[in-house]
Length: 312
Length: 181
Image 1 (cartoon, rainbow over the protein chains, first blue to last red):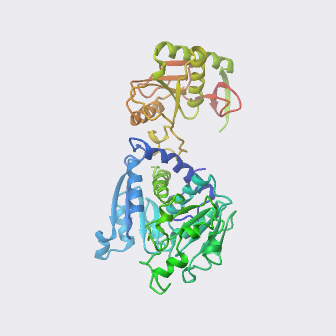
Image 2: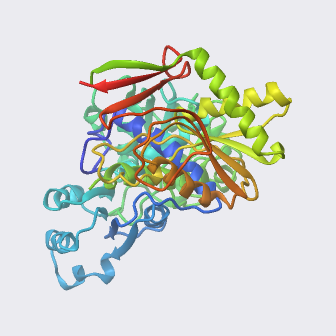
Image 3: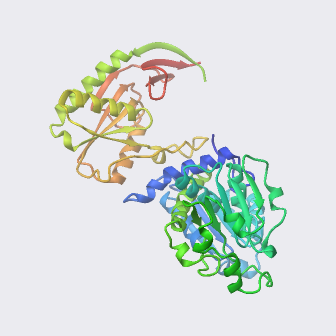
């Protein structure tokens, strides 16, 4: 079952078979990152442009290393140093990049749908590295890979996603992916940060997505607890009284984690706000797979670049 | 794709005899078997490498290490094939430097697979020497590559296909000469 599409814009339009193909391919790529020579010639002569309109360490570095380990040439453009500051439109930027014949454009933008607009005007494969509060498909794929490796399966698991759901593209992509693969997703967070109706956007599937009554209910008997970052840079203010209060009522601490299954794993997409949404003893504890997520991110991005940018 | 079967090149019994002969040639050429690594090229080279290792064990009671190589990422035609081929794992011991590697594949044809395999091996280390064992050599080389151990030479036309069938992947064990119709 091949990946018959030009772009990776979101998880919502992927079939479970396509998701599994990407995860299986990523599994084979993980080994390359453990070799002494961490490079294969697969994408020799291909060009990957990382076009980042938002701050990023993990995702941008991950895409860059992924491209380089496949022997592609990776170029990084950040909005602050590009012609965007001179007033160039998104489409004009995209068309100018297209004129230099890249094979893939990886884009992160604060507006939902920006990658989709670019995908329509360029021939290169467009990979969404996060658009507004919409989707962050490679994050959901690396979370799926991490869960699958740790638990051996995804179907039938209870996954709690807690925190700032309203601003979270990670939560949306994960809700789609986990439900498609048969997991039961329980969402919880402060009432002011719940995107009510989200569950209606999830296509009918083996799994399910529901809002839990409160955070403890979501965590109870969960196999996986995914903590979201409080996105202070996106908040217009007034969603909750103080960070201290957020930490007490919604943060993941050891006591709360005890309500989950004894072998539950903890995930966080990073960057961590230690002591706010997650306590350090949980983030650094034995059940935390936060750094495995980063490692898997590389394998997933290599798989996506291979599957999308490998052709003529 | 439909095929017409033109000839049976090897029966299961033939394959067994041929593999035993190849195993004894390998033993003869490599006095220090402890330094030898039999590396099968995915997919069908892998069970063949294991079969050769079993024959060597029967003959000399020596365990020869085996490995598996997936050459997909090193193919020279990746950007022209329509669909991305599925990637499988390469499984080699941590260090191959100084070893004698015997690459094992089912059919030697253009030689391009072996070129890719050699490039991949070199990325893992610097073997002392590399030898090649194939069950069938069907001619039509496009690169200057030859095998050290050959089960059987078969004269073919370009349209014909050598189909090696192994119990690990197919229902039977035999080698057929078929042609696409």
